Image 1 (tube, rainbow, N blue to C red):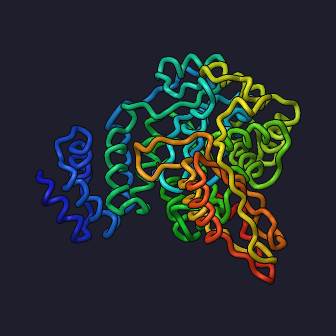
Image 2: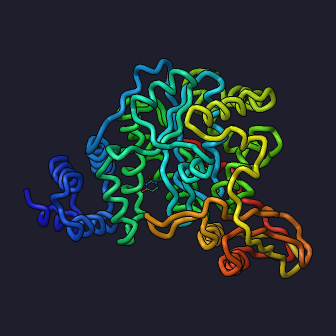
Amino acid sequence: MNIVDIIIKKREGNQLSNEEIAYFVKGVADGSLPDYQISAFLMAAFLKQMDAEETACLTMEMAQSGSMFDFSQVEGFKADKHSTGGVADTTTLILAPLVASTGVPVIKMSGRGLGFSGGTIDKLESIPGFDVNVSEKEAIEFAQNSNIVLMSQTDNLTPADKKLYALRDVTGTVDSIPLIAASIMSKKIAAGADGIVLDVKCGSGAFMQDLASAKTLASIMVEMGRHIGRKVTAVISGMDQPLGMNIGNSLEVIEAIEVLKGNVEGDLLEISLTLGAHMLLMAQRVESIEQGKYLLQHHIKNGMGLEKFRELLVQQGGNPAIIDDYSLLPLSTSKKTVFAQREGYLNKMNTALIGRASLETGAGRAYKEQPLDFGAGIIMKKRLGDFVKEGEPLAEIFASSDEKCTNAASYLQQAITIGEEKEPLPPLILKII
Ligand code: URA
């Protein structure tokens, strides 16, 4: 077999055989293929697409390119969750302890943020002492003791995806539905969960900007789950404004704790309850989504979710005192408030630009190795549909310098559109597949 023939075959829009895809993935994982040929393959696949059969084969080959985790020693149905990436999307820190507190084990491997989208691992690392590096053996022990593990993807989890994602990031081939589906599902399959709830984000702050492409991506991943015998549900949810009010690592940890304390309502809570309820339904812990949401809400009221979060912190070396004293978390010292420049209704938020503003504060990464400022970020003061007076605060920015605050403020001003007439609000949950 020859890689040039495979690239040309895809370039001409033909279906690749399983053997050809396996040959490509093996060459990616063992380092025998040079970056330029991998990149050429990725561009051909981006432009000519891959059909369902090719995507399923690519996924399984990528999943098997490294360790396949086995958590069968942990009793019970292991439910996992994955978001395709958004802004102020802190749902994992809320639903993982809530779901685990009902008796359903959650062993979740998460990633770091890149571009406009934040990452759970970065948020956890903003907690002093919290160790995200957990081995398979430790994960089993932790899950047996507490039902919850939040860990970084290990080096040997889908090495082919690591290489491919890094090259996609610099070759303009990230937003390809088959490549995203294979990237996400290969990691979830290798990570060993029995069932996966996918939060497919759709809107101005997501890879999928319209409902049709979000549905296509969701359907491919759900179908793939069916083929390989894992339960998969996809919730397509709106990303036309930041999900929560806080953007940035320690700021999002604070908002998640506030939700667990029962002090915050709104979209972030609603999505966390919906995704969590689907995890409980999959695990047959409840019989309906309504019952699942009710149970999770009950575990906010009785404090069991917050206690599970505390247990998670203690287990993985994080300082549990942050729960009662947010000043123990990092917070950048330069501050700037962004004010409304006119009166009217907040009609649009370009969420990718808000993500870009967060990147300017130092809370996000423009490239993979970029160090983060855990205490940087933005607190949004308004949501879509709100009426604002001229000069009212729209957002508060935190960064390590005034210059960073000013750069972030200019992106935020561009991102927000205020109009005279109130426009209809976009739906929060668009579809469940
Ligand atoms: N998240 C992933 O894990 N992979 C992608 O390709 C896009 C989002």
